[in-house]
Amino acid sequence: MMAPVAAQAMTVDQFLAKANALKAQGMMALLSPDIGVLKAEMADAVAALKAEKAARKAAGQPPRVCAPEGTKLTQNEMLGSLAALPPAQRAGSLKDGVSQVMRNRFPCR
Image 1 (spheres, rainbow, N blue to C red):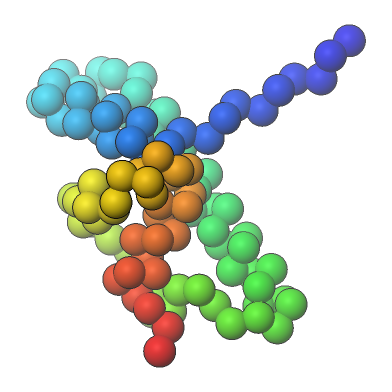
Image 2 (cartoon, rainbow, N blue to C red; image 1 turned 90 degrees about the horizontal axis):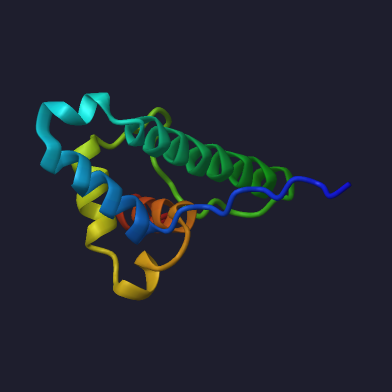
């Protein structure tokens, strides 16, 4: 019996394409299952980044992002920042894209 294969993480471009398609639907987007997909993808990316932050701290390594505790970006801020990433970074995972957005906005000095 084969073990189940984990779903591949969504790229930034894939995430943005789904988000833009939902925006185009207006209020009808609320009925789309893609809203749940996008929320889950973002939650997974943020959880992975928090785990990486904790692992770096436990290993005595400096943080990659120096956002004040509790910092949150609005949906429009995050989508705009992800869209502004260079094409090569948008082709990468959503987790890596979110990490880059946060490093750009909250660099450690």
